[in-house]
Image 1 (tube, helix red, strand yellow):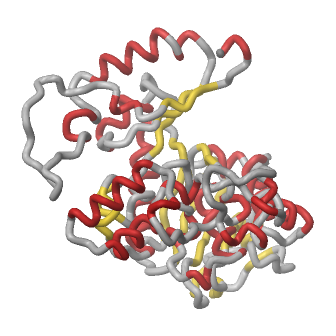
Image 2 (cartoon, rainbow, N blue to C red):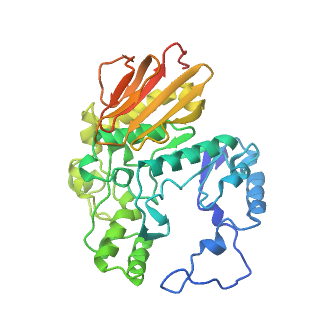
Image 3 (cartoon, one colour):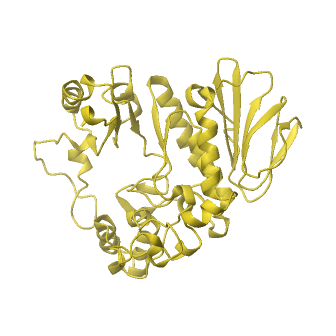
Length: 375
């Protein structure tokens, strides 16, 4: 594959490659009398022998990048996985993606969270990864629900500003950003009326497990609508025609009802669309060594609704502000800054006010004046 031009590999569910083979019974952890397989099949002792052999006999022989889907790895083991001699180039950290449930395999155990909780998980991940290697940052994937529906709780606030704010927040973290199909146009969760409308085996399993745990059928369906992997697997919205331009025949999975208002064709024609702003996000990172290679430093860590951080590369300093509130929020600036990116598209080229008020769901990327902008 590599000889044919493949530049790298995403290695699926790799921490499940080693099993505990003593076959001991474990206490049931669910009303169904069963126990989660992770206790016997995820990140088991001795897995390092398998992963070292995998690397040495395959990836290490070529100049290729490897991304491990590696749930269950404690941060103290990250050096083994992504350090200088790690098994992979980078791995995904799922901790912030599963902040709304107590367990990624038990969707009925809902967790109330706030922006502080999200911020702590993101910055813990970033600082731990920065100690040993390189991260793989993501908002969505094929096993997650839609990020706009997850991280923006109020449906009325899921719009251009919140979608572009989320995109910029994750794109400028330290590490390689990954885009999953649909997030670049702001696709959202669906709402199904029956379990028969789902295709995902995990969704069907979680529906019946929820009822076994004492929840009603209505509550179980609500949990599944929130977390179903089918949310990110619906046919892509190319246009507003039948089936969203995905096909001319009925697809295997029902469309999201909003495909007529959220689709590529519409957004390509609109220079102020989410899609066009994603292009700006990408262009800025591609020409900034600071946003690619710079160290990350969390700021405003105790602010309840603002996520903010600095990126530093030699003498260059970029400050990134993201307002998760539908109200204006004040930040204090200690210097003069050039505006690199602003999802409110204001004409300001520089910001020098001591007090600056972030607008609802504003993303503001500032370059400290006096520092050279590496390109």
